[in-house]
Image 1 (tube, rainbow over the protein chains, first blue to last red):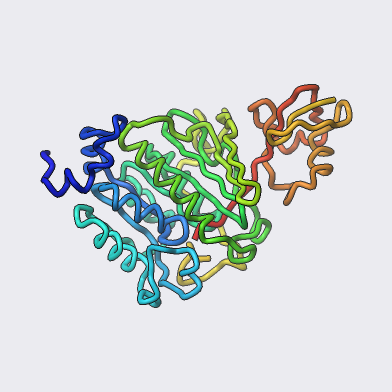
Image 2: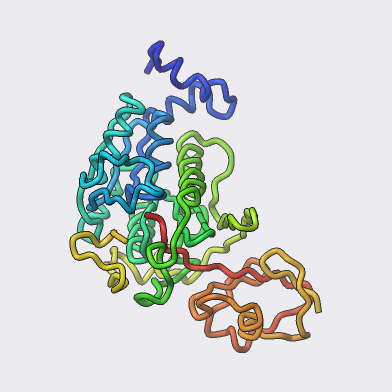
Amino acid sequence: MAFTNDQLERYSRHIILKEIGVKGQKRLLNGSVLIVGAGGLGSPVAAYLAAAGVGKIGIVDADNVDLSNLQRQIIHTTDDVGKPKVVSAAETMRAINPDVEVKTYHEYLYSGNVMDIVKDYDFVIDGTDNFPAKFLINDACVLTKTAFCHAGVIRFQGQLMTYVPGEGPCYRCVFKDPPPKGAVPTCREAGVIGAMVGVIGSLQAMEAVKYLTGAGELLTGSLLTYDALTNQFRKIKLPKDPDCAVCSDHPTITEPIDYEQAACDFDPKNPLSE
Amino acid sequence: MKITVSGEAATVQDGITVAKLIAERDVENPQYVTVTINDDFIHSDDFETKTLSEGDQVEFLYFMGGGR
């Protein structure tokens, strides 16, 4: 694959980086990333990966754009209110970079479709806002041997980690099982600053770029935490759980699970919704 | 004795248990926190009995569910 003149110009700031170069840019153009959730985290991920020239980007969300989303979900604009989020996000991504093939999934992610959707991608971004979805993505990625980046935010704090098959712990090694319904507050109940999901989502986009190009180190075996109030980033070492229910040598989970949604979060039209 | 909690030096009573440290530190949603000592997971069933030693490095890992 040879670059067109437009591509050489568009990606010149990548190509000039010795860690990316022509080879890395080709990997991005041949790569594919699935973004689950076209919301706060998904917005910067979608924008940066489209701009970076990731060849195929899938985006999953069953929800429509709501006015209360626009405080942080910057892939959508005021004119998009009422539109399916995946449609609005796809329009923005195509406008940023027509090189990118965008595939939209205007549907719920659940045990019945997650394996089929995930297996078509090189890397998965967890941009969801609830624990049943986070565990579903983890298990599906472990079972299909797909790398993914988990992230979560609450108030002024955020965290992320990257799972690479065979290389480090999975989300379930660290957090075992979803907390009971309503036990741990979500952003809707606790609030979140728009720039907070911008910081953490941008870090997730960086993990995807590094995974596809092979540049640098990933957050495998580490949880990166960010406290916006104290300006503290911390990289906490994570061991693998030798008895992990899904990624150990003797797993008890061999297919994806639909956990019950937190009652206060539940929208029957969209299990992934806030 | 001196230990490190979440990256910061702390002085705690000798032989303090993980459960007592969680209580003293006012950990949010303590029943759902994941704890590592010197980069090893401590099972929550062992919080009451597991005691800390001089120089231990303790991390609290919290559920963060937001994102959309």
